Image 1 (tube, helix red, strand yellow):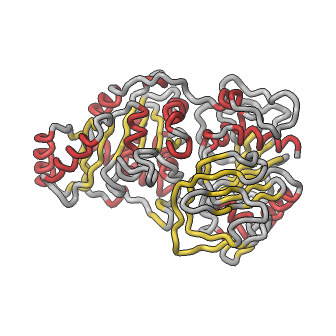
Image 2 (spheres, helix red, strand yellow):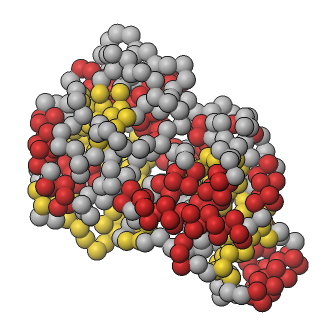
Image 3 (cartoon, rainbow, N blue to C red):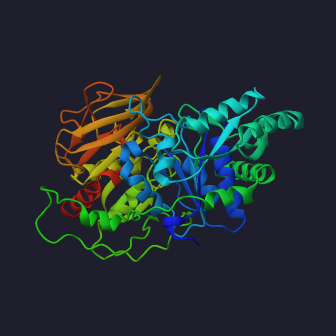
Amino acid sequence: MSSSSSVPRLVIAAPSSGSGKTTVATGLMAAFAARGLVVSPHKVGPDYIDPGYHALASGRVGRNLDAYLCGPELMAPLFLHGARGADIAVVEGVMGMFDGAAGEGELASTAQVAKLLRAPVVLVVDASSQSRSVAALVHGFASWDPEVRVGGVILNKVASDRHEALLREALESAGVPVFGVLRRAAQVDTPSRHLGLVPVAERRAEAVDSVAAMAEQVRAGCDLEGLMALARGSGALSCAAWDAAEVLGAAPPDPHRPEGPRPQTPDRLKVTTRWASQGRGELRDQPPPDPQPSSPVVAVAGGPAFTFSYAEHSELLAAAGGEVVVFDPLRDEQLPDGARGLVIGGGFPEVFAAELSANEPLRKAVSTLAGTGAPVAAECAGLLYLCRELDGQPMCGVLDAEARMTEALTLGYRDAVAVSDSALAVAGTRMRGHEFHRTVVEPGAGDIAAWGVRTPRRRLEGFVQRGVHASYLHTHWASEPGVARRFVERCRTS
């Protein structure tokens, strides 16, 4: 295995969305893993769904690299953290290669992340409606930013041998290597709905088949040896890998934290999550350590209804001294034993509203825990679950609000500031977030709001009441690790 600073790596980019990045990236991960390589999967941007397919393909946790949410300075450290012990890393890009945060130049684009990682780019081109013009397209992308190294292309949706010959001839004149040619293949398609692909957790058996088909298509159509050689040409990174325990140790003290010694954390954090119910498989980078006796249990919602979470959140909670226990609100009728805090991330509660509503014992348990003042952090789907009802179905009733589906899509990055003290943040804490939903909550903010949001317009958003912090904003705690420490300390004292 390579050291993380020199791990071979590829960034899979495209001229536009819909070109086939996910098929190629996921297929490459699975094809390399089938050769016995340890593959580290990554996704540029805030997307939660693609990393689920990446994890299925590679057997390792899928991780995000978002320069808007976390800052450009954390891209290489977070990458190195995820790539520890890997033989190769595959990074799937977002949108078109140069598309990033609106009005922010290259920020959060695939091109920016490729430069920060000193990684070669493989451009996936949908060649279904072109022949010689492909050379002009690829030349433009390869020359637009001299700091981005486009190492070659993979041609997708090629119609025939004749079509392939025309494309190869054109690209030979452009001097750009062709590392693969993929024909149209319906079996690799994955179903979509209102927020993108259907998550792996909702269709695991079918997803396994889809990933296997992607791997076979990539294995048959791509030069894996050539791609590995290209990956080995990545530049070395001089920064240190991100480490949850270390960043918590370095984080500035919270003026609202209780006096006394800071909780001890291990020298090297390991993944510590466990499932509340037995018999559920879980991806782990390393075996979990034995929890400390004084570790408060932090219940984290999982399962098909709540699939949106960043791996670093659980790692930070564990580093702060919490014992992270995952439970499934669709199946588990009680919170994990001894739960002192609750984290409910994003997902698709609107798809499972009837099932979530039918689990009345768990809804009551959530309401009871929140009523004690215990810390509860809810993002997007979690916000909906805490409302009185969702599309007419009773939910937990923690918040005096109603949620419903709409046709309108709310999407985009947000700049936010905490407008009040909460279990997550001190008033005045600035964080960046991302909204992605087709629902509305009425009212949109409680008597005490969670955030003041500055983009796209100034508004108050979310709810803070007792220990509850509920909001539509998805945030990445690696950008503000003190959030996790504050949350765990509240678990101890509530």
